[in-house]
Structure formats: structure tokens, C-alpha cells
Image (cartoon, rainbow, N blue to C red; front, side, top):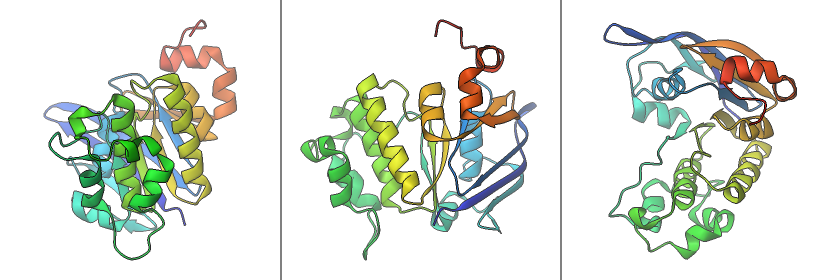
Length: 235
């Protein structure tokens, strides 16, 4: 069952700079996409949720406060992150990456299932992280998170730098994850991905959520796209 994530008045400061200025978000059973220009605080939000940076406010997963627990404990409570930039270990093979996080017993996601979902990873199982293409690295980053069998997975710009055909496959995988009941918080600049996966889209502007709208409304409103996202009518 999907984890319920409630974020209230989340704030992060780096020195004198206020990066997050009271973020409020709710992921309760249905996926949520967060979109926004570069530098608006999206990646900092991901880091704060995972306990990677100091923050104030409240982060509750299934009603339990997780703010301040630290990354390891947050992960054990049921949050997993697919980080921006993938972050592979160059010296580890694909299979070794997966072995690091694979769980014992009979979890929903296993290494065998990963290879079925991403056949390209099965073909490249002996290759090192630095020998993979951008698309293959993203498949591996997503697989690592899924193998943790979390209640909710946070994905930070998963379509960044991917070819259109791989983006199409990514959308299918994300829809499948959601259909099986895993919670999803999707951070995306690619509006097509954001609106193809989630019916609700939150728009982040300068460290706050400026609006939460239906995906169909955002797709239809070119003026809103241009105002909040800098998307031109010809994009």
C-alpha cells in the first residue's frame, strides 16, 4: 500500500540563504508531480525529505514524524530516492549495484524482476557503472530504489538527458509502479513526463509551492506554463 507523505512548512537554510521557505505538500495514495524552473528548490526538497540536509517543519510518513531521523532511518521507514545525476559506483558492475540493496525473503521487487522490467540491464549486468549510457544509468538508479521495496519513492528529474524513446519507457514504468500501489513523488522539468504520470501537479517557485493544479489544466493553460515554468508556446 502506498505510503502517505505529509510535508508542512518545510524550511531549509544554507548560511544566510533561505532555500525552502515553507513547502507544503501532500502525497496520499495518488502520485504527485512537482515542476518548476531550475534553482527553485526542488532538489533541496528531495534532500530534506531524505534527511540529507538540516531542515525545520514537519515530514510525516504514514502519520509518523521522520524529520531529523537521518538518511538511513528515513530509508528504513519506507522512503527511497532516485537522485538527480544517477550517482553510480564506477568500479561496481550493474549486478553488484543491485546486490547492494536487494532484500531477502519474497519482496515485490527482486533482481530477477528488475531484469525483466529493464532487459537492457540484464544484457549489461557485468558492465561497470561508468560503462553505461545515460539511459542505462537511469534504469539502474530507478532499480536500486525499487529493490528497497519502499512505501514511497521520490524521483528527482528521472528523464533528464534521456532520449525520447527511453522517456516513453520511463513513463510506462512509472505508471506501472503507481498501479501496483507504490507511492510516487516525481520531481520533473519535463512537463510531458510530469503530466503523463500524475493527475496532480504542484508548481514550485522560489522555495514555495505556488499552486497545485490538475495535470489537464496545466497542459491546456499555456499562459500558466510560461508564467511559472518559462515554457514558450512553441516548446
